Length: 145
Length: 147
Image 1 (cartoon, chains in turn blue, yellow):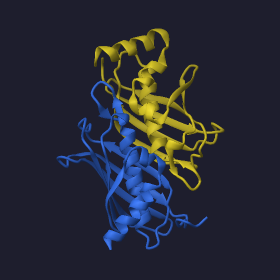
Image 2 (tube, helix red, strand yellow):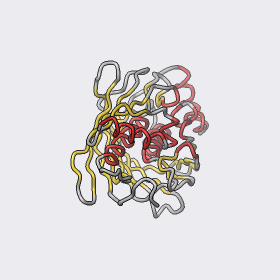
Image 3 (tube, chains in turn purple, red):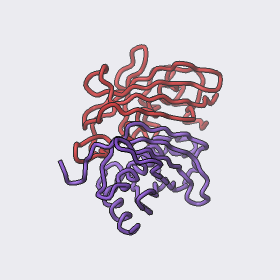
Image 4 (tube, one colour):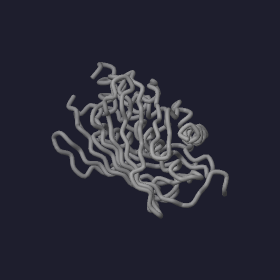
């Protein structure tokens, strides 16, 4: 079951042009949880003095992870636009580290999906940022207009 | 801070060469952020770019790109308007999405509500055709790094 949902999440993320630019990939997905990987690259550096990545690239990782978790928590998949999102940056990610974004659906309601997640360094699992994001349900399925 | 970055910042403050600062930040270049106007406060522009799309059906700009552009603009705004600080470090960032960001030029302006000795609070607005109809509003805290 999670194999199918990982495939569905992969298809969902792979058509997002900006995620392709960032080489973001789906590592795992089930009906509640999504794990994405953002490889380190020079293009996402926010501080040229020390090579630390821009917070915005982590925000994109988590908006995508949480949005994919919201999409995947419905049997047929529902594209849910982000209503709001908050990032807390606990520490700078080590330069050169690939980043892992994990998102979970906390509550699925009639009009909304509530999600939370965090960003970890791939090599040592240290949490560098946490995220809370809420999504609107607009009844949009992939392929429907 | 490296000597190269210190030089770029000094030039920016002496001659108003703000593009050099923006060009020094790779992530700003990835998104395509540029200084649009510099009146009393800077306005930034994120030109329409297919690489920034997050919803290919509409098409619409990726919400993470809008957030990243607003956060980067706020950091640049602090760098440009405050004396003697290095690139500020982001502490937290919260964004409310009000409308879909269409594949059009997007403009960003910032308001520094409070700058203490260590932390700055910045409000950020993003709009496309009408500043009175923002596509997103955000707020951020930055840790200020003294030069």
